[in-house]
Image 1 (tube, rainbow, N blue to C red):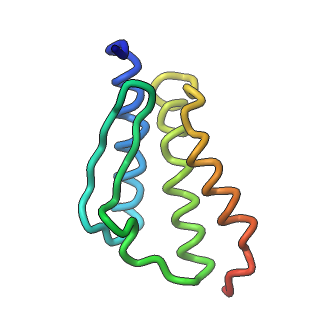
Image 2: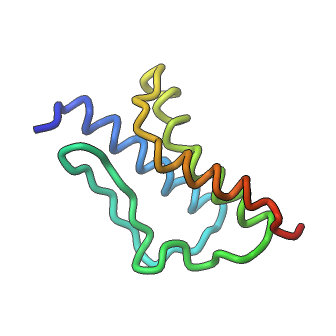
Length: 102
């Protein structure tokens, strides 16, 4: 069973992804924030982000959404739990695929 503090960190991390996505006007099908025994995750619906376009701006927005979790942890808890491996992986993939037109 996860400690209450871990669950709180996970909730803040995952919720920050959602808040930033909404702020950037990324259209979502629905949103589920969940913490399982080892990790947390955010599900943006059956097809992920609804409006993913092959544009540099959209890729930048998704990178910002991915980075929001760890940054929120640093802001609220003065540290990051290191639970952002999948976020960093997606950031790397998007940044590497910067063949995306402007």
